[in-house]
Length: 231
Ligand SMILES: [Zn+2]
Ligand SMILES: [Zn+2]
Image (cartoon, rainbow, N blue to C red):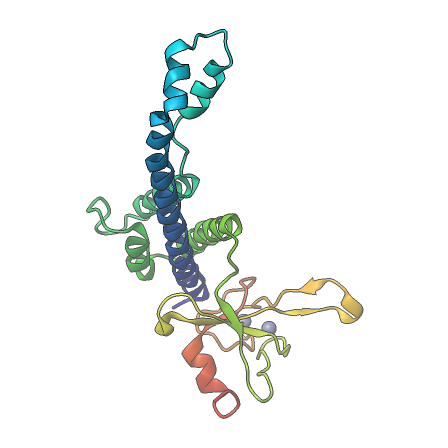
């Protein structure tokens, strides 16, 4: 797997998790809307309301009450957002000719199964789409990325930049977890220095290292390299 493939796979699992949260919110909202709809007929049956309705006209205040009682159904914005995200993923699956597109499968499944067959350049574009969508959904519903610092008695250092700022990305099955380096800051709180690959000969030790790509490793490879430090 190239770094592009690792980034795309990690982003796809992260988005899959984010969509699950979103689907739960949409379900909760649908239940809430249904509960409110069940309450409204009781209001309509109220004797006070009925008598006023009988004598009401467009010019008296009852008209306003009537408008409130018959307001249109509340929109389920979480469901709309989930639908839009699913639509975008289906579009993405079609763009990369994912086998099985159009069979009614979940589009994340389609994208994940197609990723290993894609060229690195295409994969980089797919990774960006997935990452943007994941960030958008997570910001909208207020959940942080699924990640944790790589702990140990002494947190392991990045083989490339030597900063002890490695994080495990924990979305999806454990076999798909990855480790990324958050880089470092200039001394005295200066600007963030991202940890980017320098390509062939880079100390990251990745096969197929790509210059300029943020460092990423399969988690198992990192745990193997620092065995004895983290477990
Ligand atoms: Zn680093
Ligand atoms: Zn590198």
